[in-house]
Length: 218
Length: 377
Image 1 (cartoon, helix red, strand yellow):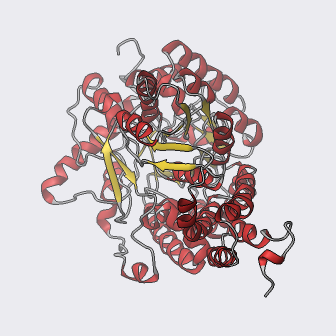
Image 2 (cartoon, one colour; image 1 turned 180 degrees about the horizontal axis):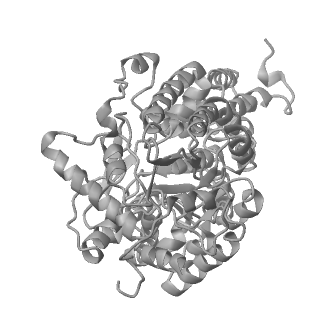
């Protein structure tokens, strides 16, 4: 079997990226392990193999070439690979692209939209602190402080729970240590107009757009 | 609430006229009204304060997707009083029919949290678990307590048929469609992964649910006074379908085709409620399933005005008032918005006005009445 490290830079990560795009978690784990065994830096595997794979997934999702089931299995393949390199990344202390705290507003138990955004953000190199569902405003502020995160993502499914986003934005803006946080919002009833009206810095209509937005907000 | 032309003291419902407008035989000056589900939070003050009736509810829930209604002798009087209220509500609010749906007992995992809608008081909102289903394997599938259809499953329907005022129709369906119950039993994430990892299990669970609803519909269609089936099955969300369209065509639409066939054999229309961005499936709904009408439209996805242009000469279009706008617009703006829908969709007939989805707890009663009042003008 040809060593990956002996391949050209162009072909070295084709198999790994493909395994992510196809959602093959067995292959993504094996290839990642082989690359590690051949001495490739974890950061390089992430940047040159896994992230480009997730980038393709995000673009295909945005244009309706693929659907949520395919995104979920791609994310599963990404996680399988990340399980191999995560300990190495932590040990190398390499900075991520940025920290994002994300959660669903109080009164709202919707999970899947937020989870897709988490997967896409992680696939794009962000460190994501997912604080779950039904999160009170004060917990968003607390987690931003604790993690020194610069970006906050807020999700809501319903018109009624969407109103809770305003409370979160106000709580974040009124605390001197979090007031400059870049806030992005998303969810089924959301519009750009609503995001503007509550003082959010951006609105993303889908998970893939959330990555573009986070990159802009950095 | 007296500023509205509601409640109507002496209603003159005409279900035959409604059906004829829906199938294009009659072109009306103003559209009839339609609704899919109305939350108890909205119904209660209208029944109490405007109709002077005592609120009774055999359950705290508006929807009964788990089929858990207590039909014990002790509870039956309560059920009857609740049904009398339901009939009175739809009758005096100006509808030509009453719509109620119930479900077979299909227990699933649900989560609950305090409803943040300001009008809901301390009511709890029930949410479906999106990642943990009760069926995750073949073993779970085999052991699941699949229900058997029994006579008492249709107590509510029979009572309504026996107590319908003259001219009123009855529209019903199984509470929750095949895809909706699949996502309850497997969870949405679970069904997505199973679709790819074990398509045979995905199909087995789907077909089991599909068959149950088919048998349920056979009973339903034996009710002489049933006007139509308006079946819900949400296939989309705001930007695409919940699973690839080809999988919806493969696994789910054949079941809807069967339900439509059953209806048509009895000379009844089959209307489909399906939320989200499902425009990619509309040709399949119309030409393969052979639906007679489509319900559920959201302005952010596809407005009823656009739908009218695309499909208004092939099927009837039901509802269309965007729920977010219905919940949040000021009265004047809301009236203007509703009027423009009526003006654009009424010509040619085959249109009934109502909420784009349903009347949830967070639609203010005042706004709901404004919509009806504008429609009745």
